[in-house]
Length: 244
Figure 1 (spheres, one colour):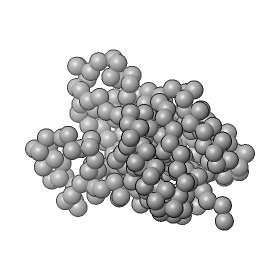
Figure 2: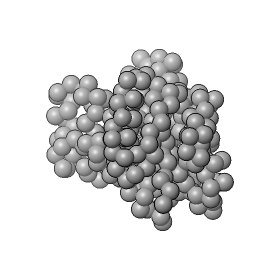
Figure 3: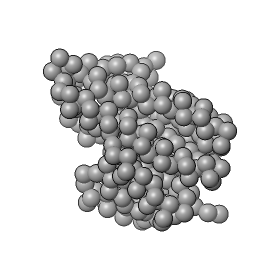
Figure 4: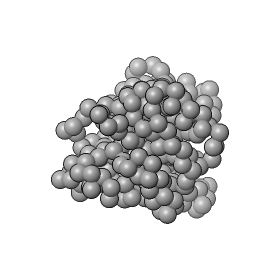
């Protein structure tokens, strides 16, 4: 049986890294995209290969359409196919709207939202030829509820949700499933930077009483990647009950 090939953007750390390792455990070939830290990307690749998968590390800024095309092409050149694309790359530039710099708005929208378009557009061409594929976009509960100081991030994540539904309708007849996962507060470097009082306030609103782990998101992505053959255009919320 041919191994499936999965591209994960922003896979050198946090949720992206955990997804890479979880899917490697399923025998998948993993394309690890990164922008900032080559050392971390190489570490993730080594861990993928120790679990029996093949790994390819590709540096590229998903906000740049040409670099996104090169990422998909690198996958095709190495593995001859792309079965799964996971649009995970994301950044924050938090500030209240009155103080938010235009460049901080543009950077977040370019990476978090335009990056999803760039990679999806490039991948869909090949998935159509293959007569199938899966695209999983990492959104956020902030895209559903909003959050003070994160107008740029919330707008990008809400945009991902709309994009997911539109693309799902466009490509369903070609056997391509498109879904989104909306994490709540997950224990990563991003949330580690929050002040203690902010974390305590957040925990009071989570019925399960804890922050999520990257593995909680990776398990949902694994389900959408491997099992969910009749689910498309949906937003799977993984937030410990925060938004219910």
